[in-house]
Length: 386
Length: 185
Image (cartoon, rainbow over all chains, first blue to last red; front, side, top):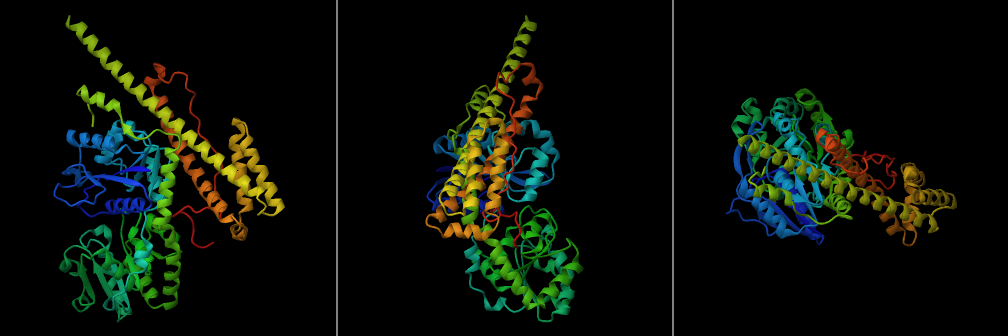
């Protein structure tokens, strides 16, 4: 099958959606499909052979933060050329509602279009205002995928219609086979994520930490991620600071080794998560998971069956749960065992087969993807709305 | 003179808008046709695999008859009874593959592994195709209820799209909807 994938965010900036697309493309290519990914990228960035650059993304303020987006005449032309050259059986657009390549591709293409909705943003004012513009583009999508039941609910509430739930994929064996590192073992707690991003929840963990370290004098906290390390431990009593170890940015291999080494992985995120891939990675590596009870997390952990949940933003609840877990070898082993059984459904072999099933369902009896001539006519009349 | 020009401009704009809306509607209808064809194909596939399993002699006679009867009815049903017949096939499949031992027994039989794989795939794809179909129905209906479409009869003689409602819950022993089921059974 000839598959075209559209990535809305810069290929050179690391992010969940980009990693998902990279892994999906790798998986599909391994299964013998022809894949081309259209992504924004700087001209100098080295790209894998299957990625086609759509030009540099422009930083613009959007939705309360500065987003790097692609739009304008040049991008639209590149999208159309890519569609024309690719002659795809199906195109798979990620985040079609972000005003970037996804929306442009939706505008410019006709034929079987699959779209994955990653975020579960509350409806923004811009979206409401843009609804009449978005609708004609979004109604071309033949199949919608939501990454979690939670994301599906928000999608149905905001845009109507329906979607199938296919979770994000993880290469389970990559994490399961990683070699644990000796210096990261022995009553260790792991945290991975941006240190200076409050939504990742490090402040909550820091508030809980004194209690945890008091009850478990041998415990240590290992933190991997970008951000100001001094500021993160500023509120912690000085003698406790040496029991917090910062690893900075880690490679994929080290991330797997870290998750493989720690006893408990803590995800204290306070919101803004639609899936929680890190929980799946931690479970794959055989770490017991303790996470805040966000909708998305509760779902990934099967409502608490595959990992423990604590009340969101409640540092005392977090401390109590962590202390209990660290002192209960049997419970840890049980969680580890359940977790590694549970994550099999998130393995690429399962997720990839499901995504292919979606492709096959929409391409059955449909013509292949082509450039939509109507927008061309519009462009010729000087009325192009993309 | 300039009034005439303005009238002409307005008429052209209206005509372009109408033709654009008609194009949108046309595309929605073809998407709907494709979705319906895909749903048909998946339902037929599921019924055929179920019938094959029922006649293969790997199930006990009672289960075979129940499954054969339901699969046969689903394939032969008239359009207006189809939703009920397909729902009954879902129920029959659930009754037969309610517990894992039955599925294991089929898997153990010669060729059973493949048949079961096909059935698992079919019961997973039917709900998918149905969601895509009903999503297309919703989009088409939303546009067809629009004033412009009604006043200018842009939909022509195309029938008003109807959703396909059925029970498509897969059997526990086969259904594996990632991320939504409980770990412990």
